[in-house]
Length: 294
Image (cartoon, rainbow, N blue to C red; front, side, top):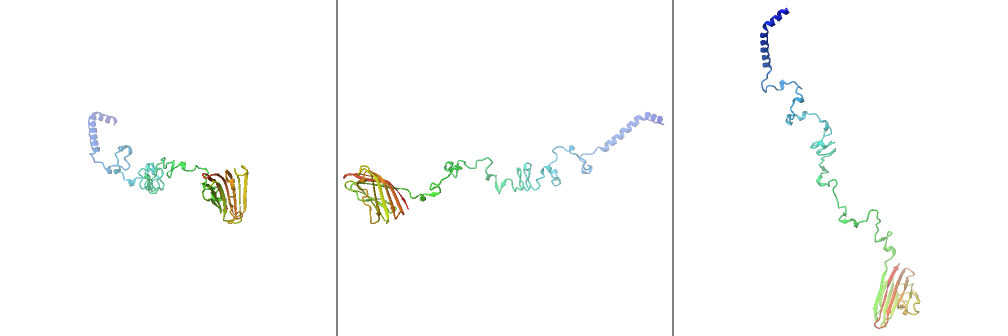
């Protein structure tokens, strides 16, 4: 039987080849499709893979954004209304607008702070104020940190009144023949000077207080040739003035006067120098300082 089949092939092989060629042409014609004839119905589900899609051929208009899943790297951008630069946002939770925010958690708008945009603030590293001035005043107008600032009106926390009044300047100068002149009125003590027509100086003292005392000690070119002179008046009172208490010892004299009024309730001390030049063209002067207490 096999031999007979082989003899059949040997006698009819050309015919059989022609038959197979004819049948192949029909099959080719059957699978060749016309242009634009393949649509979604001809494609199997999930049959198109990424390598079969031309790069850059799919645009935003071809994508249904509502069907897209969550992008893994944007897990913390769930509540960002506008995250134009969310690629720079590490955490943009609760951010209404998180443009270029490194960490915008709970930020309403990372472009503003308390409703003020960046133009309302100084940039990092900028010079905010003139370090050499404070309210327009140079640093030399302030005490250095740690320095002890003293009140010029206070000494050890006490004002000047706690130490008594300041010294009173004593000054008198008149030419010969001048009238009696008061040159000190302090703590109820009054001092007068007269430069008479001969150019000789005399000093008087008065008080408005009872129970007072006055004493004067001087060294003078007058009587005694620079011998110290001491005088006092223990009953010094309004009705008992101390007249010309130094006599001629007022010439080239330097000394101290002490007044104690009203049993010591009022005190005056005066250091002074007196001098006169006798003659009708002479002159007299007294100079010094006085302190009061009480």
